[in-house]
Length: 75
Image 1 (cartoon, helix red, strand yellow):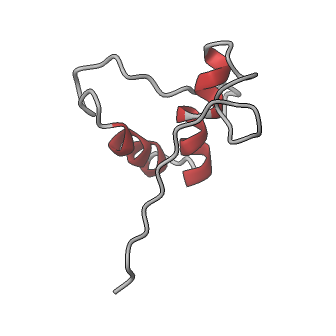
Image 2 (cartoon, rainbow, N blue to C red):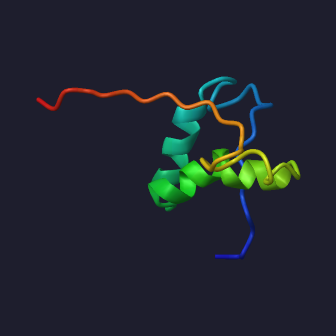
């Protein structure tokens, strides 16, 4: 609402614990972000905050990326 761009950080030892990034994204959604907005904090927005948006942050040809896809059966 205030027009601030949020980028996920990983330098905390409080809740959520260090390395529990997925839980942090869930918290963002609980507090009103859409899932897409929450994901952007850890990808595009983080790259912009680091000044690396030309080579990180989005899935585009020529950019660096680590991607894990998980398929889970629907029961």
